[in-house]
Image (tube, rainbow, N blue to C red):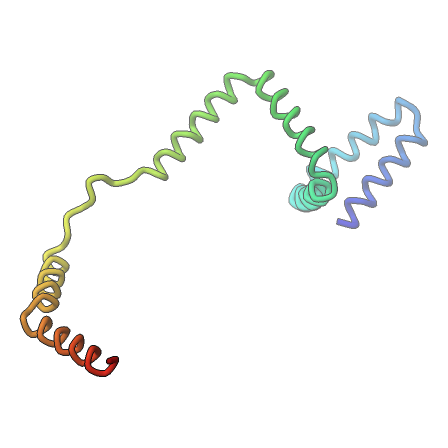
Length: 139
């Protein structure tokens, strides 16, 4: 981050100190640095952008919206196709499987067995005794 700030400050100083002819040399040097240190440059640039976003959220949103509109206007076909591709990807991802798959025979057996166990006369007798026990001790 600090390296990026230093680079930006140095570029600013150079731009103020140099005439128009030398500015193109500085821009070339900056582009050369960006291509030579691509990962480092991208990481520092991303940190810088995030910092700007948190400090100036309203300004950032307005500028970003304007940039998106400009991009859409200049590249309408590319934007439409990439947007459609993203929509299709999202729909495929959030697709629900209906009707659901049938239960395995083991799971069907567990459900039926547990139902029979829970609704057996023995289970009702136990719950009936528990109710009577509660009535006797609460009154």
